[in-house]
Image 1 (cartoon, rainbow, N blue to C red):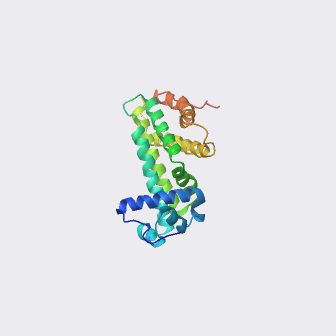
Image 2: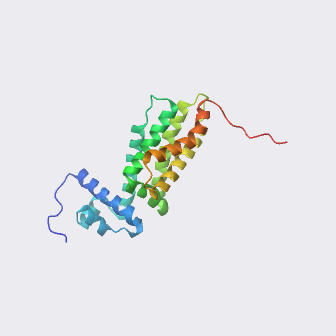
Image 3: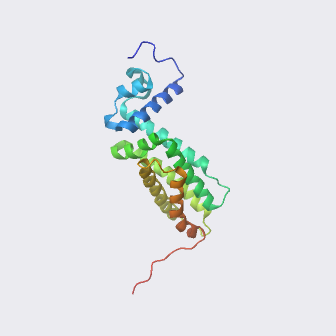
Length: 211
């Protein structure tokens, strides 16, 4: 039961983080449509009017959560990549950082991938922005690593394929949480490096000519 004075005065940044933490938890469990501002305010330990005053409508709150979780994920990946290592170690460290983040923040990935993907509209734009940032990061890694110069489009297309594979595997992993993060990351590494490894060395497959 809510009591007067339950919400203590906190710095705005702290209060907003508290609200978004609660919102990510509720959105990940119930989905956007079923989640209510009443439940979010209850989990956050604040009144509903205060919730609206801080972060606006449910739609605005959901979009803010997507942006925050996407930023957290990208920062984790960028920090995890070891740029001074060999190309395979750079890719491995990035994959390990990605799956490490998903494993430690499953509610975040639920909101970022499953919930945002299902809603469409303005939330799809937020998701596309996250993917574009991920593709840009991977494309830069591939461009720096390959011995044969890669065009911008070549690097971006390969990066998009890797990001898509990573998203699909992470989504699968949500339903198989018993699998360790390192094992899941190693599976994707083995799948992609057999191809990327040759590309890094400048070896390219060509389709057979047909008469």
